[in-house]
Length: 104
Length: 169
Image (cartoon, helix red, strand yellow):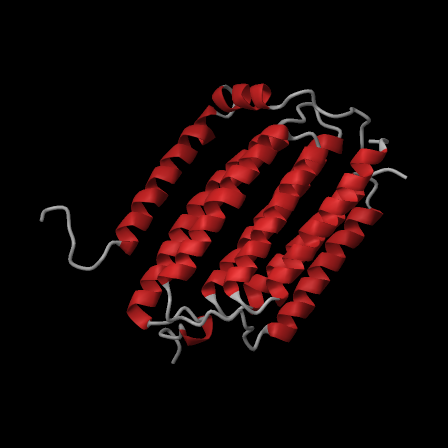
């Protein structure tokens, strides 16, 4: 028995599913953000797994891509949490059920 | 990857990662959810090490387990009157169905596909090669990423600045 590419891909799929559920179903905006971060992690894990096992001329390209994904995720987290604080300051809540200003 | 240590490490880390991610969804208190999220990030960093991706593993610990989780904790602390509970919206059942379906489909496809796997063994060290690639082939995205980080930093400072305070005063 050994650990192959498929094992890592299944861990990535499970992690992506949990993150998707969090992003769709959580009421708190911060919970939604946690789901998005988990999905980023799942995708990064898949990139690294393919980089390690896949048949490619330059296998480290996957690592470079992951470095860029981490950078963009950090920028996204900073802006999204700033937005959460701003919404809280104006509406006294970050419940996504009650952010319904655009609803008629 | 035939040695016993890697196999044991993989299964332990996979259980830790997926288990604490499930805990983030199940636990009722948001602070506890953040702690479980950090555990999940550390588990992913361990999985990177089993894939011999040393640079990315250290970056994961620094940026995800360090910076982003502290940012999330800050956001929770700065919204004190918002409900601390981690409840679901009316989308819980459809969200659960959709997430299960997506995870099942991806798992099924990854099992059924005949990937062109090559027996290469682990990388010796990755940091030097990643650095060279970033400064030669990928230098334009690298510079764009630094501009993006600067803009995001300025944007979030501008967004959360208290009302009435400005640079002129």
